[in-house]
Length: 418
Length: 99
Image (cartoon, rainbow over all chains, first blue to last red; front, side):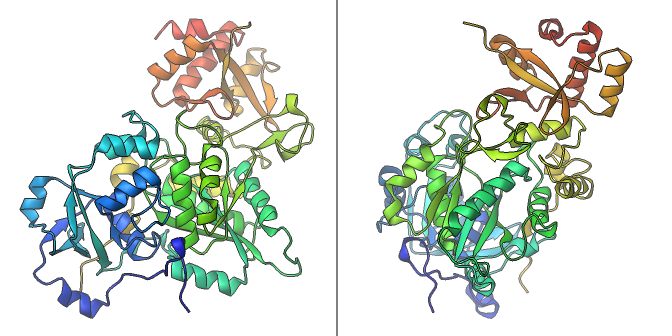
């Protein structure tokens, strides 16, 4: 039976069989790609980005920027583009109507059928997607750094990525993910978007969303799960290292704060744009494709600095709710109330003057000061796994350093083709 | 209207607590977040801006806590030493004079 994804389009993996691939790439001009484009090739070809079959045409980008829709009318909020310089286009022999072989780390990755080469006003793209053209906005900085030409066309993976340990069990593409959900018997699955090691505020965001999603369903057997979907992409100094993020999220299940019956951790390759409301809509499409029925959105979802209002993402989602196949679950902040002696929601507790709010940033400060937070704030098993990850993968630190950026284990590699 | 103040949390580990006790300041830390001890030193808006400029890894948590976070540990150690020296958390202008 067909698996239907975002935009009511069938999820189809665009992946060529190895024997056929070996023949198909013969003689094609080779175009090396950087990690962002490789991440997006994986996103497209495994169906994470359904209905996209390739990098966007000018009509698609124009629709996304001006109407938040692809040329075919499906809601889409962030341009997925492949940029090259005019010199690279000449040098690699990229021509409309031709095919090229996209290579990553000097190995064949995907075939691209070149359908269009075009220009686009990057400033207009920034303004439309990010609501600003401020070069300090990280999404604008990424857009401004795009090369001057965009190449559109379908892509087909010819060589599957090798996902390195410890990430390999967590790479679960859409078709496989949907099988897992069926095996678990989950009727509703709520997405938790993260780039963090979880503190108990995050844990309760997930638990609260689980309750919200459960709603009227019968409770005799587990029917609702939380999918932690960690975004793995570009890192900045001071972020948690990726290994710590993925392994500590899973530790919540292993240590019994959740269980196999209601919790699964996974990852998606994506370089965050920090587009706030627009990124929230993108996340809705992505998680629809993964088979989720609900998506948690908290305060300032995927935002940065002070560019977006706390609930702008919720407002934008409301404008397209009839065109999305995922139900947004809005979450209030969780905090510590010393009067209650527990983590509670700002929507529940009325000891406002006693509230002690905390954030991922505050927790990072505590850890940096060499202090182990109490278990009500940070689970000891999570703390221990985080510190172990620092030793094992982070060159002594659970936070990204220059050394980590230089020497880290790549999340995936494209192996030589046999 | 009272001037707005932005806290910097100096979380108290055992080493810092021992120093406070030796200086007779064992009662100075507040208790927060289910039992953590913390010294809260405050910056005004101008001092906050200077801190964020001088220490670029620092971040102002504008969304949740309105506190200045992610200062390097050695900077916090210096702030802590200044608190001990002055026997007071009112030390920011003295501390920033060196920068």
